[in-house]
Length: 55
Image (tube, rainbow, N blue to C red; front, side, top):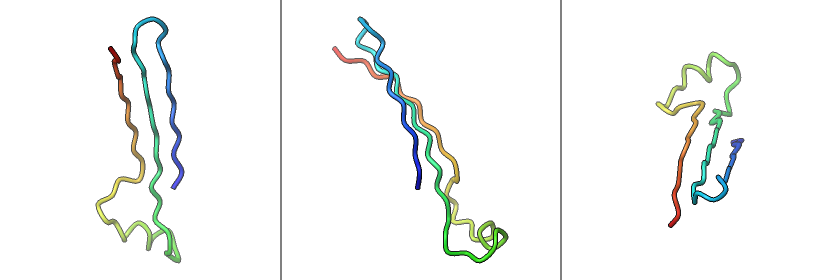
């Protein structure tokens, strides 16, 4: 499923900011109602933000 990532290096600090968004869709259903009723406990949208330091 589609995902979008972003990396930003903060100059002179050794820091990296990383962000990611991911869409997890469910396929193989005839209607939207069937898709909604087939909830497997998975998130449909997720976002992650990390700040990393290198030394």
